[in-house]
Image (tube, rainbow, N blue to C red; front, side, top):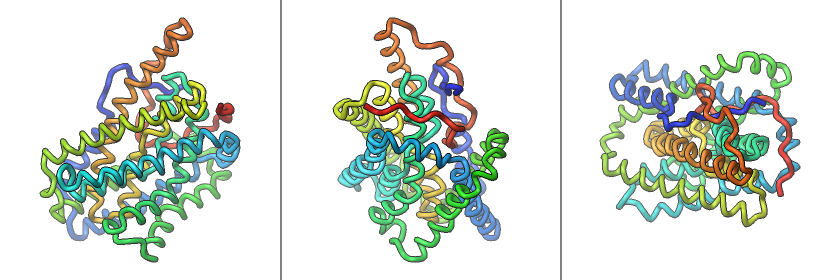
Length: 358
């Protein structure tokens, strides 16, 4: 298995630059009238395509094999879908002094989305952790998020997304769950094609997400939603997210230790359990929030870049600690670049099952 790595310095993720450029384009040239209708229809199709590709890429056999290591995966799921939401609910006390209600809704939504896959694998690899476990844990989280994220959002953000009506359930099923299940069903037929054209399909992933972002922020501009956000509020949001990330990194590391996991498994738990998926969250927000999606995804976009920068430093520290314990330097090649577009966080190719969690 080729080991993915990140650069030694702290770059601004190129895809985040593309996302920011798309936001700028939507601010300068928002879609109106017929153009907005066409862009909205295209974004709906793009979301369905994204989840179809997610389903077609996820190996059902590997997911079933990973069930044997249920303690580690359950720990990551609890961190992602229980501890994160609890912290998000606690942040309600910061409204309206630090966060506005729309920004708080976005922060809480951030706490409900699944974990990453590819960047979690990369950081676990650099830190000399259990990479197969990170693959399985991220895949389980993404799979669970297709059901849990909309349900949690409906329960905790009912006022922001209009409640969980029968129409909303049908919309979620048609745009998210049905394409995913169709991808899973067709995986035996198209899996080889997806592997052979993985690089090209990566651009399809990223282009689809950019279209979703453009449509969401165009709708936000048309609704005048950005007049409600000030620089002070954005600074407060960044501070809250820094505390959230630090808390989850500490809880996942020391909590996994208390649960008896060895060092390699603790690394996998930390990097899979303390991070959130921009690629999964953006299309989900477009389905759940509609015209309010622009502010709903802003906390997630900021948190994504923050987690990349912090975890890059943390992963190298873990690698140095491992090298010191073993009396050796971190292995060569640990500074190689992550494959372009790693923000897409799609599942990699077939891997070996994770070792038994202790």
